[in-house]
Length: 346
Ligand code: MRU
Image (tube, rainbow, N blue to C red; front, side):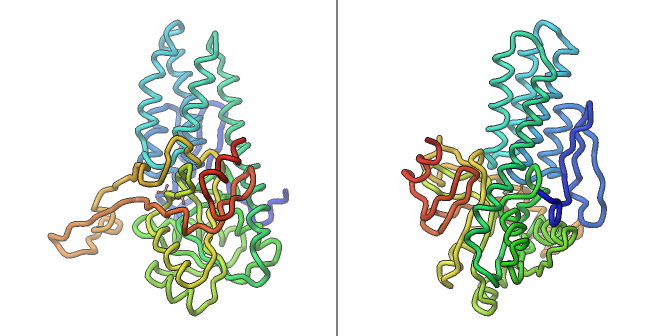
């Protein structure tokens, strides 16, 4: 895979520490933070230094490597039980993206099966999770871009690219691949209030990788669909339930409803580590509620009337009936149903 239109990596393991590109200060500053303890890792996830479902999972896997190191240094006999509190701390960092719990469970299972502390086995597993995520993204890029007809205008939401994954991206990976194939005329991106993942992160990523991008405010999506003949809305996911319901960044559901009305196709791109077969439907997904201040203020400056309150769910749930296709690394599911998703796992 050439690195044309694919130059960024936000998660870097460096011998004894994890380096994370600090997504809170992008696009104006490009700085990597160096993290050495599970506490620092949990905090980085909570504070959105790193965000995006697969990226959170990968980061947590490295958090478990650091947790084991710290625990073993403290107590060579009882290190396994010392890790438990770090596991809980990492699991409590954000509630909606299931990749976090998926990656933690994988690391915990490995730890349970170890007779003796073995740093390289744990580190190899975290690095494998990271590497496989990138390979899966390339695969989803191929599978998803096959749906994109020549001269397509597409709309994406939030940030689902190299910043949100191990690299390349899910929805943004499909957009990268379709752009490389010459089939995308224009990429539109929602600015994605209140964290501005679209205008700060997606736009930055695409500009870095020489893919032209046009920003819109969320409120412009309906007019955009009517006036710019959008072919596809392409988004990622934080959790997909067994029946194909999709939790993703707040505003995704709006786009799905608008897409149905305007005859625009709706694609969700996510690795199978984002699918939670333990939940029957999207009503069961825990939706993160964030502080009202994120809406009431912008960079510390008030942008609302004194005395107003705000409701700030970070994610919403799009019912499977509004989804045309789910693209995973194991294959695509058109018009998702429980039966079709179950076959992915067979
Ligand atoms: O709050 P965030 O920025 O972590 O939300 C991210 C999203 O909603 C993404 O669309 C999702 O995690 C998929 S990332 C490949």
